[in-house]
Amino acid sequence: MKIETNGTRIHVTQQGNGSLALVFLHYYGGSSRTWDLVAHRLSDRYRIVATDHRGWGESDAPVDGYRIADLADDAEGVINALGLVRYVLVGHSMGGKVAQLIASRRPRGLEGLVLIAPSPPSPTILSEEQRATLAGAYRSRESVEFVIDHVLTAKPLDARCREQVVEDSLKGAAQAKAAWPEIAMREDITAAVGAIAVPTVVISGELDQVDRIDTLQAELLPRIPHAAMHILRGVGHLSPLEAPAEIAQIMERFLEVVDAQRTRDLDDVHRGLAK
Image (tube, rainbow, N blue to C red; front, side, top):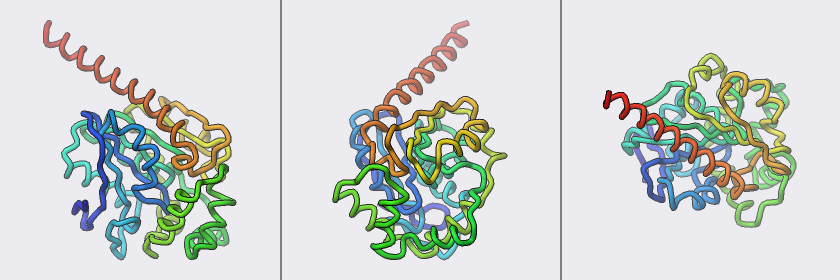
């Protein structure tokens, strides 16, 4: 289905049931289906909502509007249109930076934040040569396959997942492909993320070459001091495809904590009313 929000139409997939929804935001080059292997392990207990960022997957691709705030507004519009009362944001890479900004706004109903190989809130500094290489990474099948093998993964993907990554990467609109390295990657949202107040877990691949553990330890964790980090051994940047079972297990444990926190908060409210 497509939901009209923030001046464009965003493609959304849904599955599962539960009073708590998980809202999945994908990486630069991906789509809502990037999450399939994780989502199907969680859909028996939670409502799954996965979006395609504007310019990616099946979403519309306006000429402009690809800043982090634009993508955040899109996602919040979807959340509001679906009437989600309780939800946890799950963001990967670029989607992780978007999720951080949304969480910093402290929207009603947000109960937790899962950041998977997230882009840090600080600007990512690249040379012009590196920026040009990134902007051209998804130009052809050959360039995508090179990036898969030499940058994005530490574990081989099966044939179906590999083809999915190639298709999603090539399908992105030119303006969306250009906007991340030229605009959104350079944005500084560090002043905002200190306002994040919900429980937060950061899941990082040990061999991630894109958003490295040391970068997240220096640029992200000090700004969300209550966040806990989990490291996936032998895993690269595409952890939702490389290690979906491990991610689902970490998320299940985290979501149990989120539910327990809500129960304690409700108990406090009830005790207060009883006085």
